[in-house]
Amino acid sequence: MNNPKILLVYNPKAGKCRVSQELESIITALVSEGCQVTACPVLVHQPVVPRQLERLASQLDGVVCCGGDGTLHHIVQLLHSQNWNLPVGYLPYGSTNDFAASVGIGGDIASICRRIAQMQPRFLDLGQFGPESFSYVAAFGMFTEVSYQTPQTSKNLMGHLAYLMEGVRRLDLSKGWRAAIKADNTLLEGEFWYGSVSNSTSIGGMTVPKAEEVALDDGLFELMLVRKPQTLAELSRLVSSLVSQRVDDELVHFIQAKEIEFLFDQPTAWSLDGEEGPQVKEVTIRCIPNGLALLNGTQVVNPVENPENK
View 1 (spheres, rainbow, N blue to C red):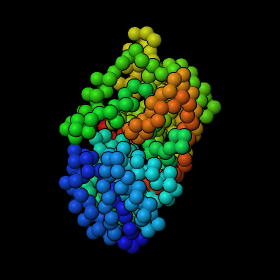
View 2: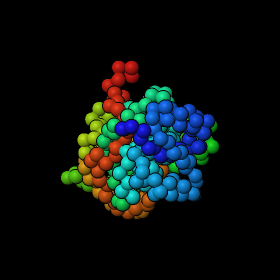
View 3: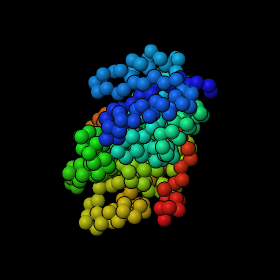
């Protein structure tokens, strides 16, 4: 495609404010590859991006998101909710960048922009959480509030370490979430510390169990459930299982499914792609096959298979 028209949506606060410092380089790199670029900042409590997309959607060939996984989430959610079928490019500037790691986005600005400008999308599965959508993970339980309740100033100062410190501060081993969960034809009930439905090889910077089985375009999502241990022996087993990334089938469940239904005893808060989501007593999460057209996604070497990690 010659001279594709791109809306560059950028979060000035992302990446320890590096986006603001490198914005000229990003625009220059895209323009040098033949793109026609309109830049639009994400402004808190101001619908600048929706207005620009509504005005320009019919004229655009794609949207490039420059920020963290949360910024990408809001753009994908907006495009999906309005049925604007535009491919998305991603320049990752967040503290963790799980999505970018899973889809193999890396390199310098020029190389990332070069791949975006080729306008050859890779189609990935998208998640549907009730009426909302998510790019790579929906989660409830322990630690899931950390990503959206960690102050931006702390993220900018300490990056991923800020999430870890906030998570430790909020740790409450006595708390649990009681639920009945149906994943396709599998039913699980009990009290859980954590649950996620994901399409990613990592969540919160941590490689998921059985990451070698994760495919981003197979029409299946991965359900991970961590049961609340009832004894010190179970707690010790759970810690050992999580550290070694070996699934303990009695305490950690890992199931692939197209559709997962949750029924909780109490309204339960969720996060979607690390952003604050709704509180629900029941919800159905579905996989939308090939629902996301990503302009610069590549086949990533799985973390557990990468020789450099052995």
